[in-house]
Length: 342
Picture 1 (tube, rainbow, N blue to C red):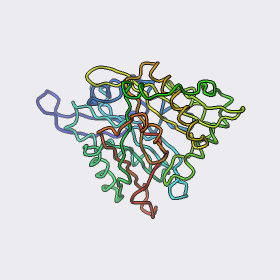
Picture 2: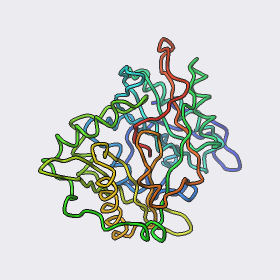
Picture 3: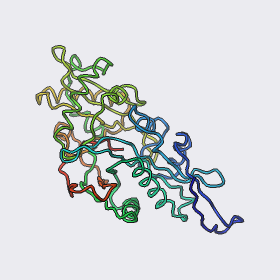
Picture 4: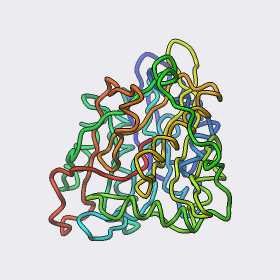
């Protein structure tokens, strides 16, 4: 256990201590996030955390918080392990996500400590690269940069991007009938074809997550809130779209459909459009008040733009950093990337 001490202000306690807690309960993490994330944002329910942190090749011990002496979970950060392909070379990487600090404890500089302890943990376990997605202009960017600089390392933004967003009033009016005869739900027997399709999507990207065979069925079928559709013709699966239906906190709680996997390169334009029309009909029927697609440069999203999807206002940044000083030659910018964005 490590502890940090800071003078208390305005209360009887003169010292507040914080101890590391590995893999805290998701209910507790969810409460911390919901209390401290500013809307609009996803409602960070336990099943959202389960979706990303508990896949078969993940490591929950890389999800760590800091707990105050009074028992409060004061901060949290997950480093999700993955294999990264950058410029044709494979690395052991981590994706930093779900970073949260309680407003009650911000004066204790927990942001810097939380980031630092996770970088040290990743380096100690032999991870080589760090990637994360942040909102441009937010303090998290400076916190990450300081943590890297304190260790003689650098991290940089290699691509800015946005979501494409579509709303029912516009998208629904433009949807065709689709092709429900060729579109169905993903099944366990589709895993080999899905692995091939997803791997092909990432093969040519300058920066990409390597799809692991043992993760495929969890990612596409077993995770909470996920529905995956396949396009089948003549007994062959030629396309795949995976949707997460996620609650969103804005002025009220609504529901967004979020496109996670989009593997349609083998489909001709007409079949691709019919596939997307069918999937979006299903999403709107489930009550989606918006559909979000990350525009990471990894896939041709023209089929969504023709349906009235437009760039959302929030600009996001992909951060990339080496966790060892001897790792050289990382790109300063990338044209596109294939990663989960959460």
